[in-house]
Length: 314
Length: 314
Image 1: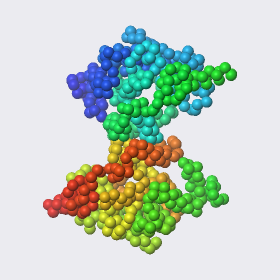
Image 2: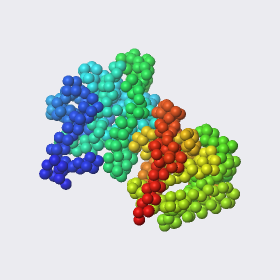
Image 3: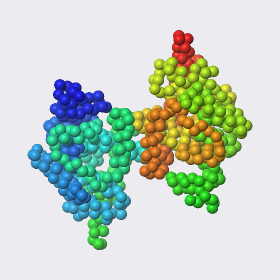
Image 4: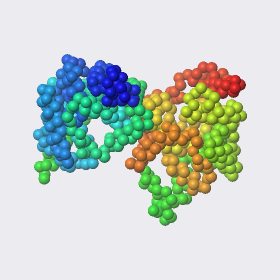
């Protein structure tokens, strides 16, 4: 198959876009489309400081690479979660993130749950009275707190994550299966800052996972290929396989599902601007000072307190 | 496994309800639950005349049987669509419907598309300029028109269909995949009459397909087991297999998906009472007098006109 834009051999064929491209035109296409998304959803500008949440995987490193190439002012944040597993997951992924930043002379902040809380994510999960089959919920809480804290401490205007279309539709799918209105309302390519919550954006939200993977490979980005060992068997992974079947039947199903949702949102949630975030009254955590939907300490600080008191009792 | 209510052997185990029942208690359970649904969703009363849309399949005949046993005043409507296929589908299914009505001394109205339009559904599909790969859309249009006409002509207050939970969630799933707000808004166990549109109800909407099938078998109802030959390979059938996978992973997923949707509806569509049906201005068809979202002739009458003029040209 030939490239649509030149006589070279195509390296990728995107059925949903009816578009086949060679290596150079594909890389340029990803750059152009990312810039277009940033503009379309008013994510951020070249004047703002952008903190990229980096896991060491293909999506986040590809995103950081693209933003850097497009001339955005970026720093990275790697959060060491203390997850080992067969492949020494956290240490390995940190090395990929560090190498990436060093090679490009970009600043990488490294946070570590052992420094912050005194424990790794597996330890926190086993100590907490929260559901032990769901380490991803605790991990998400820790990550959100840390990203917000680092963004505040180092004066970043926005933090961005490498969530791709497959991630977004898996979440959307789960939110409709459970009709979680608040989550549906908040799902967006960009969430503007409010009441001390940083602005968040997902510049890759319209790219299929295979497209970000192809970009990472063609750009010779080295990344950790293993999934987090806790993600195996998760609802998200299961939902992704269901959505892959739908995509296989009709190319473009995922993209159309996501874009039609974004189009329907203003009809489903007409007061969305005033409602963002949907928590009616945000309080300030009495311990860390971050916004919280509840009075007193926020969920993160309560988790830290619980884990530390249980450690003292051992 | 024993019946929950007596020492007999259970014939069915409903994992989502954690309930196993013997034949007699299961039949009684279906009767009780149907009555509960009719009350809960204010579908109809014992004073009203109910027209049951009967296809000859397990769901519609089981529904008619249940409503009759519960003491409701019912008549049936069978629409002969002229679909043959390997098993002479329409003739066979009409025989099951007729036998059922005769055995119970119930009135069955029989309509036939050849009498009404001069053609069978397969002929109408091939003559019409509408999408020929979608006979189900044309068939649905013809059925809705006919049910409304018969209900009006014979003074029925409400017409009911045998849609079960599997049918409802397959439609719901498709409506969220495509974010069809108008369809989501209208999906309901009962649609109250407005502007000449009959009240419609689905008393079986909370029963799994295997539950209605079990009721039909245990009640010794004879029904056509074949699916309509046009339904094979349809989106609905495909969606059902996807939803079966989800149900297999977590028993009760379909029921929870549907009930959470019904709970979310007043939040998603707060003005639902005024909006029903969501067509803002209903017109009266200049040919048949039924309500129509457009001025002039309704879709059904335009289809009839198109098919008859094409037949004259042959």
